[in-house]
Amino acid sequence: MAKTATEAFPVWHTPEGEPVSCVEKIKVLNENLSELRGLAQDALEDGVLMGCDEAQLREVLAGIVAGLVNPYRK
Image (tube, rainbow, N blue to C red):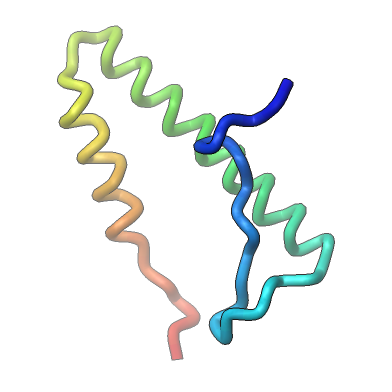
């Protein structure tokens, strides 16, 4: 089954704009993204089934991502 545009994995880039070339790094990044996508989908579906507003759920999920902290920032 082909992935939709929202399920496709991005081409990962370094801070300098170069594509990440390490196959293992790409594999880990894609696995993490897939897991995150699945958890977010489950949370959205659960919330909607429990009568929550879909727009609010999406806003909360986006807020979680926006609030992530990079502990490695120089």
